[in-house]
Amino acid sequence: MRDAAPTIIGHSSSLSSALDHVSKLASIDRPTLIIGERGTGKELIAERLHFLSPRWDQTFTKINCSAIAETLLESELFGHEAGAFTGATKKHIGRFELTDGGTLFLDELATMSLRLQEKLLRVIEYGEFERVGGQKTLQVDVRLLGATNADLPTMANTGQFRWDLLDRMSFEVVHLPPLRARDGDLFELAEYFAVKMCRELGWGYFPGFSEGALAQLASHHWPGNIRELKNVVERSLFRAQETDVPIEQIIIDPFASGHRAAAVTDDETQSHQRPVAHATEWPIDLKAVMTSSERTWLTQALAKSGHRQKEAATLLGLNYNQIRSLVRKHGLMTRPSRTPPERGEPDNTADIPLDRN
Image (cartoon, rainbow, N blue to C red; front, side, top):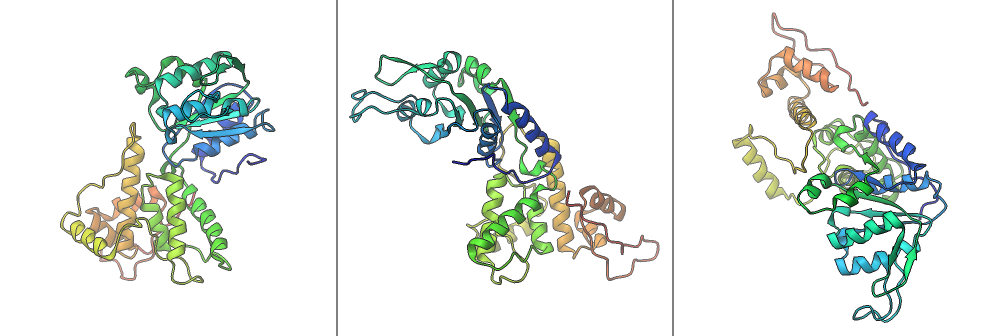
């Protein structure tokens, strides 16, 4: 178990806002929900809430509700008496008793059955429960934190989640931004994971990412967020052929073989204007998705054209002024063109700085 609040990597405004919210919530001893897409770091935020709270020197316990069958989950949370069910040969102390005075984090809260939700509600309201198969009422003082990527209000409206439990758990809700909404944090996180992987691999230093690799990182949608980024960076370093030159290739899909990659390339050649589909978890931020898609196509066109704006504009069906505007909008770097502009056409030799923030 940690003895201090975990370090959160990133300086984007969206992340800073969420961390400020967490800092204010830490001292308020109330149940809290942490909402965010998969891989956004909900467990780290729960730990941060605990270690910044007055309970920091008490037990912090976490349990994944989706990883344990309902009957076993009840026993894990509330404990059981000997003989409560087949195989229960001795008394088992549950997580609530073990965490008395501390913080209990329930990950994947939305997967909990309605029956267990009712029992959980009683603990929140009165601080009391009975072990499975027991008659004695036990008292505990535990702060509850819950996390999910599900739409709990919609689930409550359809009878899949108890409204009364949702009301009690949502004294306040922490919303974690997806990686694509954390402007500038992507490259900082990628470098952080890369440096750690270099130590694990025994490299003397991290040689950095090439411009092409950075373009690959920037163009991906990251549906798996930080967890996916960590795996991708570590995999890319593991497969790197040389340890003293910048990483050239980012391996996003470990299942892609040379044959499959060729097939995908042929398919894209035949239908290059087909929209890119991403795994969707509703609701979505349509504006953020459109902006990400626009940046993806722009980055790929610039890479394909050797970062020459004139050629990239042709690939995208844009004129020079339109692509120049997009390059400025997304803070991308373009290299100076080696061919002189045609008469009457704007000069495309000025670099536009890449804004990492």
